[in-house]
Image (cartoon, rainbow, N blue to C red):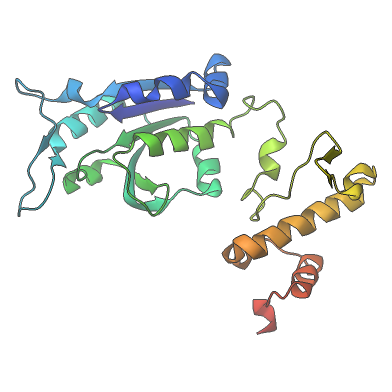
Length: 245
């Protein structure tokens, strides 16, 4: 996969791209990342990329000319899906990350200041947000998208099955995890995990996942794929099934 990032601060990507999953993906040739400095596409002596908003108001707005010029330059030699990181976009989900991981090429556009001139949006394919809060720019959201997508690419993780068990991958939060030692400061690993009874362990993990989701993210249960056994277990915990209404 090729990913282009259009930003005023390419230096923000140095350390994250040199560590962890993103480094591994690049070293294995699975992920190619190109950073594009927005000011390279700006005109005038001062390479200005922002201006005051029409109609008045606080802050500055990013000008359309350099952003669109950059998009056109990048897409002249590639055909990326053009994504604007924006608080107005749909919130990134595991399902969306999985879909993006199937793309051959992406362009992540990082806005700054009070945002982009609205006319730029005619030149993008979608807008993505990473949550209901405000950040200083699109660079951190772009890194979140990069990490969420990269770990789903074939050959990146040590265990190819790992993403299938992650929180949200099954529509639920992930079950608790334990490792050595068996006893840590008086708290023992649940005996069932030491039993070697894999079907029973699998059911325990499923029930713990259901329990955690009900406690912390009950909204997920409205769309999670639940079978009759799952529903019966949740009812014991006080869950009201919409099918019972």
